[in-house]
Length: 86
Image 1 (cartoon, one colour):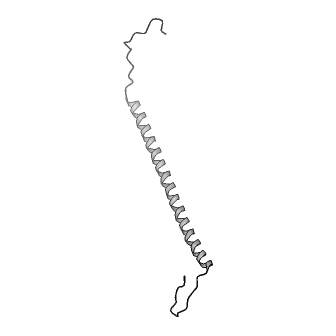
Image 2 (tube, helix red, strand yellow):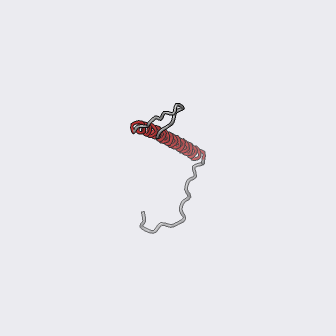
């Protein structure tokens, strides 16, 4: 690739310059990918934390509901047990 300057001179891109340009864009792309993965992990941790909090709230509500209910004794079964059955 040969860009032109106002003076009419040309600058030749050497293979080294092209490789440097390629490496810098590759490095930038890898950093963006790393940042996206980090954001994904943060979202996953946040979602897991919310799920745990909801589970804790549900357990607490269930325990409160159990303590507020009157203890109901199960009625005796009307079904007769067979003779000799312990």
